[in-house]
Image 1 (cartoon, rainbow, N blue to C red):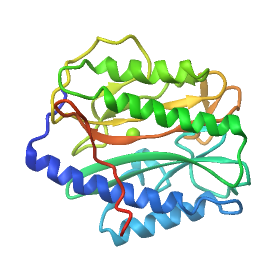
Image 2 (tube, rainbow, N blue to C red; image 1 turned 180 degrees about the horizontal axis):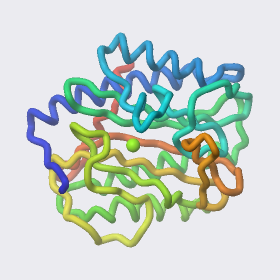
Image 3 (cartoon, rainbow, N blue to C red; image 1 turned 60 degrees about the vertical axis):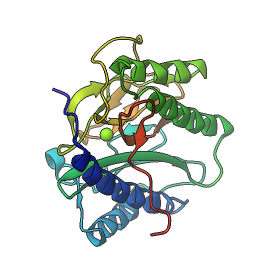
Length: 252
Ligand code: MG
């Protein structure tokens, strides 16, 4: 069942989501050659503590990180650790925060130093996929209009859409109904209503769409080990226009 949030619940979600996005923005700004993913993780933990929030991923099914950090061929769920970020890497950071009883979930992929122009095009396209998907999150549309928008933009640019992981409803729980694939025909699934809140998160690969999970049980990598990009926003479906909730407070 897709939960439609009441006005006061949306107020609380805006606060949680803004805190989430602000922390992600600060952590992402630390990505640079020579930095380890563990250092990014510790910074996120420190910022979450200061914000009086709880890191949503930490301890989730035993996950040991406060963020997911996924470098290059790592698609999602990378476990922060000793991996040193090199010049030319792309680093995806996914962060979830619980605050005031609601969860915010947001991800970004950033370049470390100078990256291959084709990798930059992958990042730009994935951001365009997210924007196109959010553009479809309006009352009266069908759920798969969101999915289709991602696929059209990604494949139109010559990239492939990860099928094994999906976006999701979000609210008091990090994962609520519905599941939101990033591919498929438009015009299917539930009709969207204002007040539904979703985490929309295209994962787009430079090469094949297939993925596999490493022996750590978490880190998802592309089958061909070519790079992958991931952008995510928590949004509220609106009448005529969606509202992006995970907008960072750049002054804080
Ligand atoms: Mg998510």
